[in-house]
Image (cartoon, helix red, strand yellow):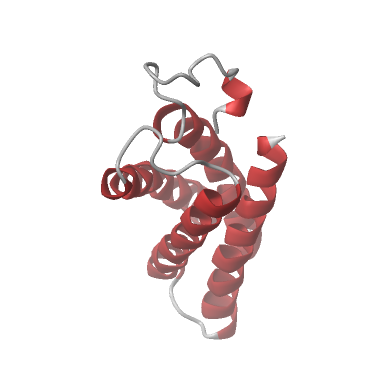
Length: 138
């Protein structure tokens, strides 16, 4: 089932994101806001590389450049979600930064899975594979 594979790919990317974030913020004392952006962007690249290798069929709907652009556009919205959740949890509720990062990563996981599967890596309607159930399109 693809959601299980996506979960493991997402977990790997989340480990990169949360690990770098935790080391930089807690270990090095760097400010959380810019660190969260940097770790998120790196984790997005890891997620994309692993996704096209183990989960999605790259180039089904779009050319590679267009696909990468769309992945990073979806991820940019994910970054806004990430930063907003972090802001609320850290600034408003004084949640530990690493716990807040874990919560924000969970929110972004579901955003990425839904949007990437439906709009980026889904089978094109004119494709002979368009009869595949939605669960098999990601």
